Image 1: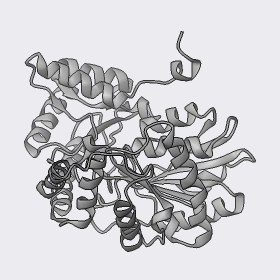
Image 2: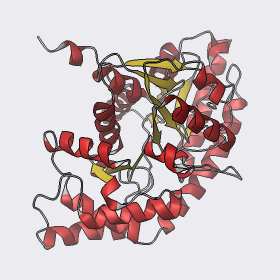
Image 3: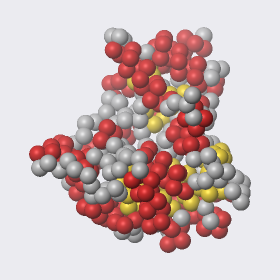
Image 4: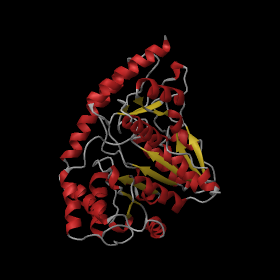
Length: 386
């Protein structure tokens, strides 16, 4: 028998939908997949070339557990210049993707019976990672536009509160927490002495005139209580390379390195060399992606709101739409399953993110696929409501 710890883990709904869609495609079905959160762009050529050169130079041996010094220095520089956070290289660790960062951090901070505040809707893995530590996920409401407020956080604080998850821009909603609320949340964290895990993996995907702020940049007190988690996966279309990183105080970084030393050791040094080039090389590809996603975002948001029984808050960041489908009288699982079976359109049920009234669609797909997908979904919803 497997352990209760592993037996209690719910499988990732996003990966399950993606796998089902890919299986149907293998069977020859013309599936339009809006399930997985993965850019449809290729990794830029300069990044791939850096990896090839690393192989040719036989850069294939163990590295320091927390990452090669050059990469940690480059990440610290990026934190200082982009996020306005004064981390140095000793306050940075490199892990096997953003998910691995979050797992390591949770294991380093949380004990059994601790509480971690988790705003709803939340990315699917957050709850499971918290559960694996033996801690309790305490679900926290957000407003009608999925924005977290200090008032909602304060209502959930208890003597057992050890951590708050702050994901802005948000997966799945695309919401960005307002700066004034970030400042109030920082004061709460300092006052009640709990950690903030700031998942900023979608930091570059911010649209219109909206702005965002890194909570650790506000002052030294909140910086010491913050873990700023990030990844190369979304920004540089490097999902399969598995390079994530975080900045935190030296005690947390040391704990994370100790944990990693007995699990993965260092991540692939070839991937680390590619990540180093991603930071130091040209950033044109990032700007191109953002422009493309913004166009798709506007189109998908408009089309969703034109469908009977569907309404969608405009996403401010990331590359997801999170429409309300409650007027269809279907659960999110029923809606997603039947939409895939009957219209060959793959979406993720909102129940995986803590809200059964919604579904999640990624607009990290070609405009042609989005247009066809919205046409199919509109016809299917109309037929269901007749």
